[in-house]
Length: 154
Image (cartoon, rainbow, N blue to C red; front, side):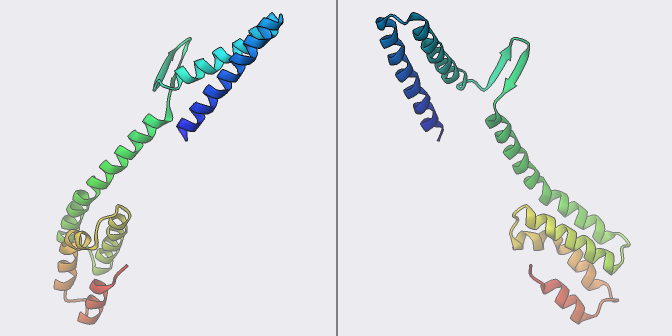
């Protein structure tokens, strides 16, 4: 798409250059100068679009492409950090004195966060395994409820 836009601008600049040349040789210097002004404007646009940052005349501008790349990089880093932090939260929560209901809420919250960060079901189970083991070892939960809770798939 960017190539199409560049080619269109080049085509308009060439057409205007031709019109300016014809007008100049016919004796309309003022009209030819106006057309050449637009040609220079198009050349300026094509030249400036190659730069990522423009600084001068009291302002500074930055292209969005660089910011989008930075945002994608940050998202990738956050996805990488979600798994280790979830593992630590699961370990701390499994060793704390939380009730089964609280453990289930923490597990569901962490499961949804891990699902949003595109971790596989196997990785989610590994991360959440301390919480599963804690809920199974707790005698207040019946085996049927425990089994249904552990086997529930998203």
